[in-house]
Amino acid sequence: MKTSELQELLLRTMPQWHYWIDKPFKTLLDDSVSLSMYYCIQILKENGESLTMTELARMTHSPKQQMTKTVDRLTECNFAERISDPNDRRIVRLKLTQEGRDYTEHFLSEKAGYYQNLFDEMPPEEREEFYQALHTLHECFCKMHRRKISQEKSDKNQTKS
Image 1 (cartoon, rainbow, N blue to C red):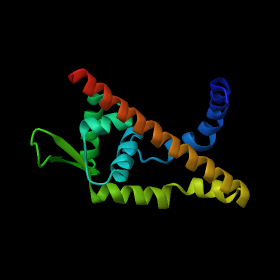
Image 2: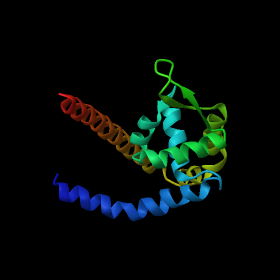
Image 3: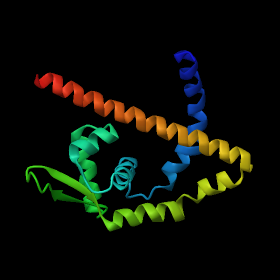
């Protein structure tokens, strides 16, 4: 497959993705929760224990200055807490609180009903196709992220040499 074909398909898909997935998602968020806050909550939930501010900024593709503002809001809402790294007290880590976990569960059960209706309206075969496509897309993004992290580490090690 040519890169140009992939690029064209992506650009043709974006308006539909925006209409069916992205735009409704933004309207489902509580007024006090920004999109970047939600992304951080999900990343912290997926990554278990805790992340440094640098790790979180890298995973959200955000500048550290912007991440500091987002983390301030997360801690003000009690969705996350700052903790000292046990091995290096200079490092601040961010950990999801129970309230943050509860928010994601509440969002999934109460707010995301739009998506349940959307998927319930699909014939079973189409729903399975959508699931497979979304799963594949998610896996591709995870692989892209791992490659990026690996490349950054490699670049960092070459700079030290």
